[in-house]
Image (cartoon, rainbow, N blue to C red):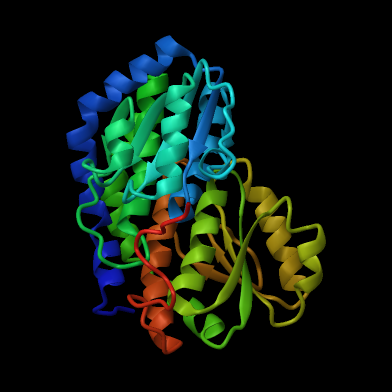
Length: 341
């Protein structure tokens, strides 16, 4: 299950990217972490678009579970369109961007800083406007990413978020788990998810389901299936899909379920079993479900497992795109930097 495309090659670089990032950012993360401990922000606001916003979803769960600080997503249009001036005192704004050049993100981060927020930017381009205006800019260290579909920069965003939280909370457990991530990412790249290709090759749509720490990678997987495979995919929390979306799950409907090994796993397995009972084609990563197709995963700390699952997914997605007759490196109507105003 391999291709020679840019997306494939860049995704395969993720383990080395995380190694480099951990080395380069060690002192910076200690400094920013100590600052956040002293600041004790009343709220963290995340600001991102696309894949970076899916990393922000991951950040929300990690920040709230490890610090108890309320974390919510900003609406960049409040600054870029409506010129709203909300109170940002005693708040931290976490801006995440591969390019650091999307005008609405730059405007939102600049306004937040002007109105009292401490702006921390996770950015791959340190000479970008976003990195330049931030109080603290942290490099993702992903290097050049030419493929329109973000892969290694997304994984770099997840690892940087874990690193930031390890510094903020002074958690030896989180830090030790993160230090194991490069080797585990190499193992994740070798996992064989090819059983998913014949299920999805002729599919018109599917659901991608996760929960908690895994919801952000479910969102990312759904986006990548749209971008690179021309496949209509929608991401849902396992807690939300039981409402209206469940009505579409009938015989033959494909569902990709992603589960890290934490408190959310049992519920995802119960939901997967219900999908199987409806005759759905269930692809289960990180869960054991009779009647489902099992996609092998690498076990780790539940804050690390999502990045391992998305690494295995990227390799499968590159192969699926080719099987569907789509060039994953040239998705129609898309650009690397989205100039949202």
